[in-house]
Image (cartoon, rainbow over all chains, first blue to last red):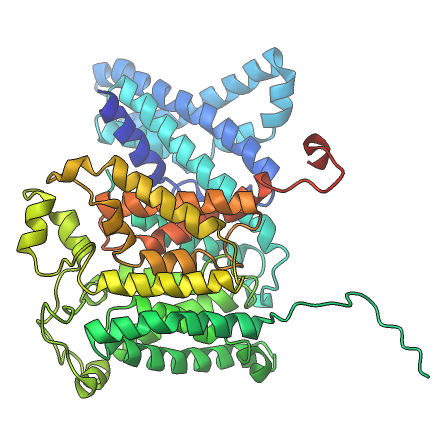
Length: 192
Length: 341
């Protein structure tokens, strides 16, 4: 039982890392990785929303779509669920904890368009995870996303002082770095 | 009398980049001799061909960037990269395999980032990983060591470089591979039944590792690098191996001594992990960096899909090094740790 869940977690964090192995959520990965502090804010917000959204989308699928025979509507309804969860989170955080809102606030709306969130929700259904598994899978995916985002941000801060040739400056060298990282993460293949 | 004003620094260390690289090359010699003894001239041919290519690619990149090639070639860093990569490649590799590896190492991993000193990833390991993922068949074709099979001569080694498939069918699984795929034999029985195992590690491999260890200790004595990263890596690898040794059962990952003396452990610990550009900078950071490499090497070796793990572990930790540095900045003298942030 415990082993099953830890395998699920390690699989989602390292072996099938959502960014570097499954290539989901690349827009925030490239867009919010210029500074380490913003990357940390983004990863905290994403972890929170992804875990919540994967649980909510599982509930939506099992208790609304399946009884009504509307499984083919899952993509569009998950988008709706994610948008609602993000909006709801924003409202709750703003009223209950202004400090947290100031840290996460800017990043919350961005998460709606993070394809990793939708990806996790759909993969949970494809892999026929139960509720707890969906929750863990979402949490693992978020941890894996946060890990590479934060490491990548620290590396990009160092790259800003590198003598990169003109054609490779900026996003280009970021892409090259992400590609090399993806190669390195292939080393985890087979662990789970 | 001319009063010349000379600004500081007035004293400088005798260690230039060229001297450091020269020492690294010297320290690699015993290991290369042992590899040549056990596996034939393949490694040597690899190195010579690889160095020629590395100089060519380095010159090309420098010319494209409008820099004086001779000045940068003199620091020998391209030669060191090529030598390290070619030692890691299986002997008797085809010429194009080495060419692809060197091109990835010198052009992508080094010059895309601005050359020596800016590369966040170890160039030799980038070349190795690119090859291992793109050409797994050629990259796992290790010829048997002397004592377990015939060792080809110099002419055959040159043939293997340029004539495709001139030596099929004489390759053998490496000891790490055999141990990873073993799930029925006790460690003791496995050792007796398989000719590739030596006294402690793999036959031939153990002596190559001891030779690289000797070279590494000499470099340490020359103060080319600090002890932190290599010792941390070897200790954590040993700890992992003892934790999962499992009394030598069929599910065992192998003894600590086997892991220290197999594959690229010592080459990695003293020549790759200690790269001053791609590793963590602070001493505390180097301890963390080395220890995590040791853990990752064990994880990927025993439970992963690939024959050896040093390259992957090093690349993953290269990626994490700036983050480690961020949190292990030493405080400057006269400040408390809270102030220093």
